[in-house]
Amino acid sequence: QQQVKQSPQSLIVQKGGISIINCAYENTAFDYFPWYQQFPGKGPALLIAIRPDVSEKKEGRFTISFNKSAKQFSLHIMDSQPGDSATYFCAATISGGYQKVTFGTGTKLQVIP
Amino acid sequence: GAVVSQHPSRVICKSGTSVKIECRSLDFQATTMFWYRQFPKQSLMLMATSNEGSKATYEQGVEKDKFLINHASLTLSTLTVTSAHPEDSSFYICSAVLAQGADGELFFGEGSRLTVL
Image 1 (cartoon, one colour):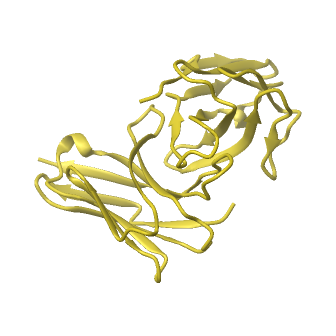
Image 2 (spheres, each protein chain N blue to C red; image 1 turned 45 degrees about the vertical axis):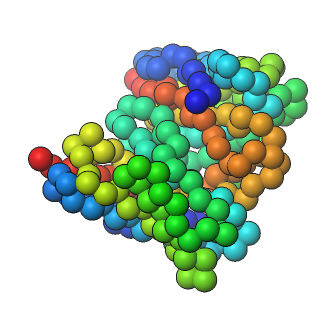
Image 3 (cartoon, each protein chain N blue to C red; image 1 turned 90 degrees about the horizontal axis):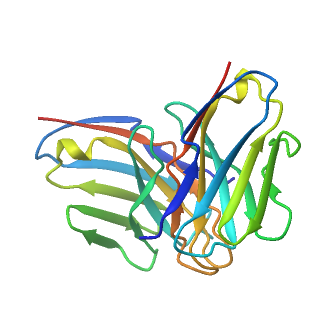
């Protein structure tokens, strides 16, 4: 599988702060970049996703920033809440046909009161 | 959103026995399902792609005789861990594609934690 690099591995943020998770990819054929949120003992759930023709996508407190030339994308969680504490995975896939998703290594986010 | 159900959520078995995990798409038909394995504090590793009515496609390094996958209907795929050993203990997660050519949105099951004693 093609690699998607994710950082940091873990992150502690104060309640109300901004959580930032970064990812980088190599395969320029990737054309769909979802972010997944996973709580302990549960399967991942789609949080937000972006295509490379858009530089930013915002849904509520969650924003993806995409830099196609640098092959990097990031997730920003504004006004972070304790309920956001989870593991976040960035991912990349080539759409069309069936989707074989390549996941990043994950970031464990802890939002402290 | 679409719902994918996995059963059982937890299973403990003795070494040498076989365990079957079911993955069902509850409110949509899934021609393609994926099986992942996740070790503690690690990412999801794709094991195989399951296509309805045909043989599964396994990723490199995954033993097809060890991890039997059957996708007999558009709503059910099963993973059977044969002759399980302690090193097979892991969190197994399935996912389903809502439709062919869709935007890559996968719906994941809740996962099944296998513990082999």
